[in-house]
Image (tube, rainbow, N blue to C red; front, side):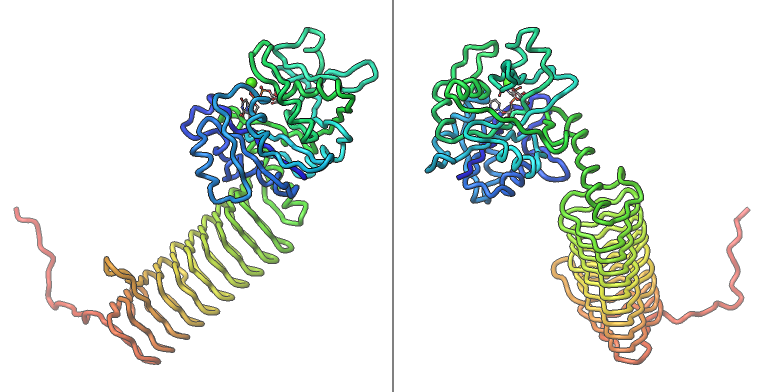
Length: 456
Ligand code: UD1
Ligand code: CA
């Protein structure tokens, strides 16, 4: 059985925030969620989050996640003390049962690194370590004459010789569960910080004749912790660079990998091009050959093969078919469902509206709660008046209709197949198919009219 304990009781004072540290985000998701991704990728049998500062807020944020258990650490007396609070919840029934300790504020440890840690572990402990040019502040990995790990000494407790050691404890360890429980009961706080150090179990394992193995992270960003907004911002950039690298590797062209932001999942077909400054959120799927222009925001959307989205378009909970042309400056809102070859141009907003093949709304329009057929042409300045201040109503525009510019469609209303609406029409009754419907004051010219002149 595999247990994962996530330490998340710390204060996070340097964040200068009312929000508990582990709820601060990387790539749009709380740090704790990233840590949980790693834990879940390993199919852990139990996941225990140790909470303390802001415990209620953290519990509330994860209340719906049934695979989590919470242990309260109050007050916070060190990393060993934190794991003690979870000890009773650790599942064990066999000798091989293992517990991994992760930190809630070290969000980007990758599953492969955790697998390497488990693989390195023999009968005893495994510690994830790193060699750092500047190891200041970290616990040092102390090895005996034959090179075996025999202790971890905290920076504050270390001798000058130990401080010269550059191999550090990342804090992530894997331990045999039964022995861990026993060692936890033996921890003391007789050290310079008066804390119960989890790292003291290394010496205990050695005293029990167990081996202490080490493993290293796949990439250096994986073990970076967040203690301040600055570190959060730095880790965000490193993670975005990593996500960009993965997209490039999968065959996506990014005009500039350093100006790419993904806050969720992005699945791309072949030969997708993404220009600079785009933000992808939630779950986005771009089919083969899609081109996204600069500075677009795309969230929870599916975009079909060969479609082009031009600069500054905003797409949220919408579907776009193949070979469509969107933007620049288009806004697709929830329930916009555009069929193949639809054109939606600048300053056009579409909400809760299916739009049939080859239909066009090229300039300045609001289309909400409508059903639009195929080959419909919607002129500039068209507005569906879908809301009477209390209720919303639908507008139906059948195939091949032509909506003249500056038309208001006062819903509920229907425009028949092949109908034409004259420019400036305020349509408040259904327009019959194949005919011209127009509501406009007749144009007159006043003969002999003179402009007024200024009185002297
Ligand atoms: C710890 C390790 C050190 C390692 C370093 C890596 C110990 C004694 N030291 O140092 O060897 O190099 O991490 O960053 O383990 N936490 C709690 N409750 C507590 C104390 C801490 O939940 O009572 C949590 C914190 O929220 C944080 C993590 O544990 O997520 C580590 O705490 P922190 O104080 O940053 O670690 P150090 O003691 O500096
Ligand atoms: Ca500490």
